[in-house]
Image (cartoon, rainbow, N blue to C red):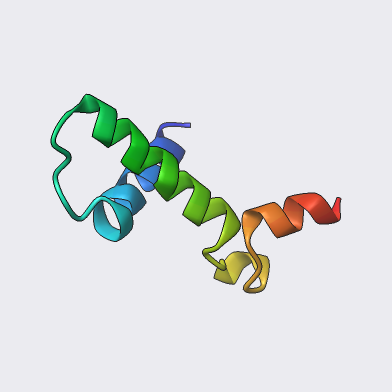
Length: 59
């Protein structure tokens, strides 16, 4: 589970959180938006270029 957390943190830092938030409220909003993009818009090679949400809905 720690490896998964490290992977998510790395993705957030390198792909989404490119600007430093002004405060905790903005940081939470940025993470929330990043998760939405990751699950709904970012295609994944391991999922045959589908989004996690698309794969989940197929089941």
